[in-house]
Length: 243
Image (cartoon, rainbow, N blue to C red; front, side):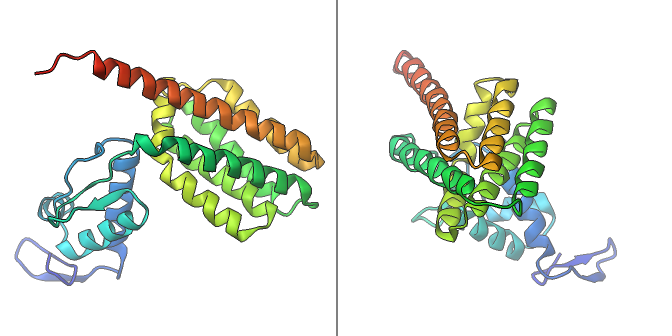
């Protein structure tokens, strides 16, 4: 394939250019999936030449996909011009969790304060996807559906600034959520599906205080589980002999 993105047959003749952006989109989706599922570990290198060979494409769509992933915080460009999968900064988790828990509360309360069912169908649809993913023990689908569920709640609340900020927090926390699901070996207990259902009912009935209480409990149990996971791993690492 040449730098224009044209594919070539075995005899070297160009088959014609790909649809503009299609190569970038396919590389972006593939790398994003691998990063979020930890198939590509934090800190692992992302060499454009090797990725070009892996995907059978020119370096242009590879570079564009990496730029897009960089804007999402999943890829980091180093001063030496090397590119790596972004590391997870565990030292920043306390402030991240503080912001995340606040947005759970603000958006869920706001959603319960709004009348009408305009966004309820979207919320329920994403909840159905989440429940299906939990049943299938599909961690990647759980992460995606959970994100869309809470963003739909934020959209019902009606403040685009809150929605944008919450979506950004949820995107930044995708790999942290992956670690959270790993603590259950991806067999997420049914009660977490039921927590979403209770939140939906509180929003539908306009129970603002109930929605607030449920969102706090929902966020707190996630934070505690992840904090326990991180603490166990730090303790295990500290016990390893220095080589």
